[in-house]
Length: 137
Image (tube, rainbow, N blue to C red; front, side, top):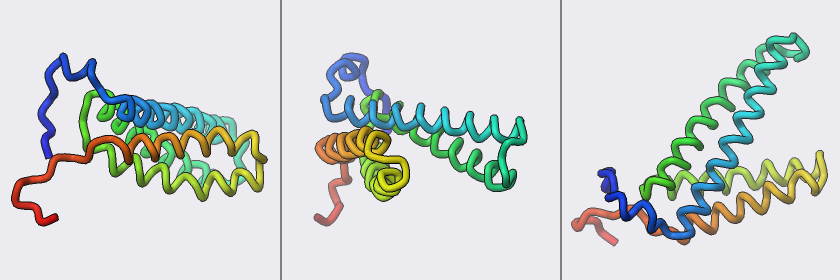
């Protein structure tokens, strides 16, 4: 798998699927950044019922925020490594979105479902990472 930087002219010729997948990762990263801010606000103001649960949620949310931002950056710089991670993320969000649908309604769940499905399709249609010549197919 090549991790060398791509030439500048290749950066402008990113496939549309890579741009969509990168945008999906960026939107999820921003959404999680907002969620982390809300957890932090709960901890600082003392409005949470269980501080340890809010603190753990803050840490997990912050970790996924950074990981999704790195995936978005990888997509936007022409890397192929975020492909699998994006597929896994989008698949894992679908059960959570279903739960949101049953608890918060379709207005909350539908945009997230569209986002995850778009990210899943974009990542799956982007080129896979280059495999070494001696790889058994």
